[in-house]
Length: 456
Image 1 (spheres, rainbow, N blue to C red):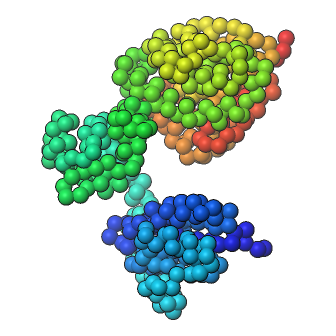
Image 2 (cartoon, rainbow, N blue to C red; image 1 turned 90 degrees about the vertical axis):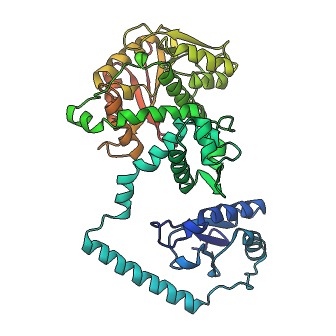
C-alpha cells in the first residue's frame, strides 16, 4: 500500500522523570505545534502529516525530528528552524544540510547504547522492587492538582497580573510571602507561570483561562472543583459505609457553592449543547421541559435550533434565579422560562413534546430514577420523547475511565447516586412504559438514551 501522505514528520515529545534527558523538557511539544502551524500556514496539511512520537533514542540531542520517506534526522531543533525545515525540505524537497546533525552510523550507535542503558535500568529497578513511574504518578497525582486548586481559590493568577514578585502577589492576596513564593515556584514548574529575575508572569493557560478578565475566564466554574476536594477526602469512609458521609442536600449547600456549581455546569453545557442538539430531530418539537436544567444552556440551545420552540427549565428555587440571569445574558428570556420545584416531589407539568434530562440520573439511585421516569412519562404528550444525557458505563462498568471515576464522585457526594450502564437505562425506561429505547453515541464523555411515550 502506498503512503497516503507525501511526507510524515515525527517529533519526539517523550516525557521522562526529572533528571533524565528527554525531548519534552527541551521543547518537543512546542516544536510539534510550531511545525503543524507552519505546515498548515503553507497549505501543506493534505500532503504532510506531522505527529508526535515516543523516544527516538537520542535524548541528549533533543528535541529530535525525523522526516519520512527520506529518513532525514534533525537533532537539537530550535523554534527558528521550523520555517526553513518546512519551506525548504517539506515544500521544497531539499533537506537542510548546513546543520551539525550526527551521521547515520553515529545515530545507530547512540540509539543502540540508549536501548542498552534503558534495559539495564529497567532490570535494576525491577530487581529492587521500585514502583513504576506510572504508578508513582497515580499515587502522587493529588499534589499538582491541590497546588492548582489552591491557586484558583486564592485567585493567584489575577494577583500575578502583568507581572509581580512573590511579596507583591502575597500583599495583593493577603497571604504569607514565603509560602506564596513556594506556591508560585510550583506553578512555574507546572508550566502555568513563567519566572524571570524574581518576577512571575502568567503562562498561556493562566492568561487564557485562570485570571480575572481572561478571554475564557473559568475561575467561577473551577471553584466547583475546589469544592469537590473535601468530599473526595472522605472516599475511604464512604467506601466503608457505602454512601456519602458528609452529605448535604443541594438546597442547603449555600449560595457560594450553588453559584460555582451552576457556573461549572453552564460552561460544560455551553460547550456540549451543539453536539447534543445536532443529534436530535426537533422538527416536530414545540414544547420542551429541561428537567434540572440549571443555567438553561441546553434549553437555550434547543430553542435556538428550532424556530417557535419554547423551553421550561425546572429546577430548585435556589437555582432558578441564576437560570433567569444566564437566560437574560443569552437574550432568550422570551422563549426560555423557569419553573420552581423539586424533581423528586413536585409536579413537572404536562403536554411536553420532549423532556430533556441531563446530568440528573447519576445523582439518583435506581429506584429514584424509576420514580422520576414515571413522572417524566406523565409530563410528556402522547408520542413525546425523553432524552437522557449522562455518563454511560460499559456492561462491566470499568470503562470509560471518566464514567468509572464519576461513579466515585457520586459515591462521595450523594446518598445513592452512581454512573450507570446502557442496560440499566434501557431496563428503567422499559419498566416505566417507554418504547423505542435506543442509545445515541456522541463524541466526548457522555451519550444519550432516547425513548418515547407510546401514542395513545
